[in-house]
Amino acid sequence: MSINLSCQSAAGQRSSGGISVIFLAVSAFLIVTTEFIIVGMLPGLARDLGISVSAAGQLVTLFAFTVMLAGPFLTAMVSHFERKRLFVSILALFAISNAIAALAPNIWVLGIGRFIPALALPVFWGTASETAGQLAGSKRASKAIAQVYMGIAAAMVLGIPLGTLIADALGWRGTFWTLAALSLLMAILLGFFMPTMAKPEKMSALAQAQILKDPFFRGNIILSVVVFTAMFTAYTYLADILETMAGVPSAQVGWWLMGFGLFGLIGNWLGGNMVERGPVMATGVATMVLAGGMIAATAFSSSHILLIPALAAWGIANTALYPICQIRVMKAASHAQALAGTLNVSMANAGIGLGALIGGAVIQRWSLSNLGYVAAAIALMAILISVHVARLKPHIAT
Image 1: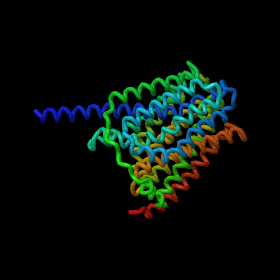
Image 2 (image 1 turned 90 degrees about the horizontal axis):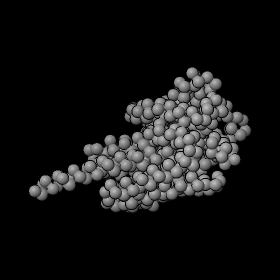
Image 3 (image 1 turned 135 degrees about the horizontal axis):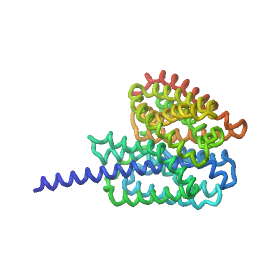
Image 4 (image 1 turned 180 degrees about the vertical axis):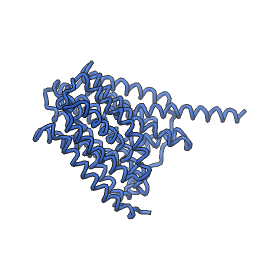
């Protein structure tokens, strides 16, 4: 009898864990969508608030730099918190911040609505993958972690384009209200279905930070910054590129972004396979394709027939670089891989913010038509850095 009860209890825990992993994946989808949704709404949002597109683009910089600066510190502070309460709190915070953004009368209040979730995002990414593996059990850990990371690809494929379409139908405020409602729903569902977990042991931050002494690890971190700078110098303003340079009607921009994201699904699969053959090499190859796609999209923007394959190459490389960079940095760490993953998210956001700044400056000083070429030049710089980083590999601490 006790054996049967034990089996039923174990089965119940697996079922509860599986549902919780799905809810974490959906939460990842909402969190990544909240971060990048501004990209698809920049033209309309700028018009509504009476500001320039480049000024509105600095909301991307604000979010990214907040993640960069707060990420490692806040993640270390809450690393020992019970996971269920932590995730429910994060989703509730996203619901509140999206509501603030929806009500914002000006860019300053909207900035507050973007600053608050930027504090919580790195905490989520620093703990969600590890928690998913624990919920699923050792035999299903890899699959569970992959499900959570699929939230990134899903956000790129569906979240941002659908948000753009909702913004076209209901206004950009309607998009933020939708995100607020869905974030609140996920907080409630996690509260009901996620099991209470044992509190993790608090590890010395100084012990974890020893990975920063390794030149190979530092090189990989720097490489992530430059790669993401290249990506977001142009991607931040993709909606404006489609409207202004390619002449795509604003009502159709969301569909074009969805196509960009669908090609990104191929990139997500390719990136996961390429990185196993060599993380640094995979970064160089994907970044080379990224540069070619951005140059071609700029050169052929007036021809939709030629623009589609250019955007396909750009989208594949863009999304492939997410898992490639994350896995590359974590593999470069001799220990403290959770901290390594959080540092990569923070440094990637440094690149995202820097890219948005550079892109805005290019638009103001030269023109939108030069954006793809500048972004490609930064990508080529990343390729050169990847060659140097590869030479540092023998110096990994053992």
